[in-house]
Image 1 (spheres, rainbow, N blue to C red):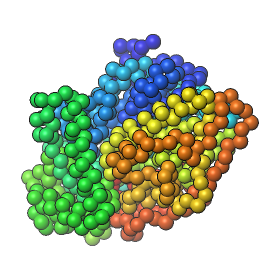
Image 2: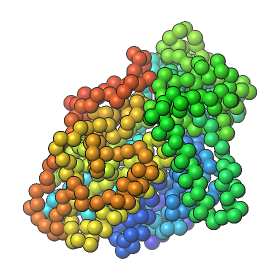
Image 3: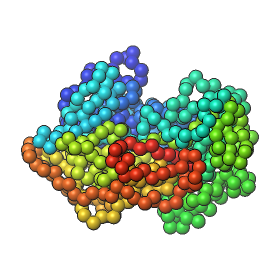
Length: 550
């Protein structure tokens, strides 16, 4: 049964199955990619995709703020099995959403997809060797039983954004909006706009709004590293005249990955040299005093995410006077705008709080094994895609220093291979077992606020393979290809009952904050480490500052 033609694009309305072999959660880049790889390896598998939102596309359907676009090049962000053929290397959000939907439609995945279905809880039964998944739908709560569950829902909370708790917001006489919930009828033409933040969202919103606003000010507490990339890659345009789309995709990936890896590795080994490269590029666009005050962070490149701007559009807006940058601390909102701690008042008609997102694992669903809740804070992450002691469930977590899809596709291929191993050997349960004696570390090794907030809430990585999660695609590609799916794994035969799952080593609930952060200075919106007691009470979701200095 196909979706009715009258339904909006990206939506499906069909009856949920009562049981499937594989349940994929999420119909964005991660979920569609995982479903493709699993069906590619095992075409006859009984699979369903559930998407909490009313339409597919994931993040790219959610975000509708001005200028929304990719923060990495599309030749590494797109699926390797379906080359990106758009003109822009840094693509608009709407084009990415259409690309995901077209990929699903061409692969027949829309026939497997159920929108408006939110996974709220799942419990594993060792005797039944399956998950009982609680799904909220428009028609009420439903149960779906699944032999395997893969979460391709990312780690953002789509329902709630981060709120730094600025004082006096209710006193402001203008409009306050968060990019995650952008009102489509908001008219910013000829309005004074203040954008709070300096991360990927802020550097996107500012030049887009500056096209028609009276003036836009980007208000940041701490500068971020910003790097200009060509909106249209001339290398790609040259190759497209001579080579097939797949060959163009492959060669462009090699080129872009080489450049990205060079800068990242340089930042780890010779940080001053990496800083000089990035700041040198900014100085080619803006006066040195502006760069020194507003674009020179107190940390090194890739200690936090590097923000990409296509064709230096942010710098162009600043040069022509349509936008400016203010670095300072917020005291409070006042009727006319935002007052800083130094007494300055930034007058505004609209304030955009690009202050980050909230992070969560498993889409916020509560996970239990044989009725016992899983404490995420005490689990080691196996290859960054499974949790120790939690059987038959995998997740996609991408890179923080490169395109998400690069690691997502490696994960999807590995999951397909692991499922094939279970099928070929008559196995019904697969669970990672963490060895004793590992030193725990953060699953994401950045000093950004959102990382420091989740140190004691999210799972931990270990100090040896396969319990590490390197932020290096080339190393990962080799490691995943050579990976032994049986390493540090416990298996039970299909149909086995009464099999006790091994517990393995537990991770420490607390970790020291990973290095210094510009987000801890006694001001509003500071990062604080969440106590272990709070972690135990809320093991899945945590409020966290993402991609911003606030």
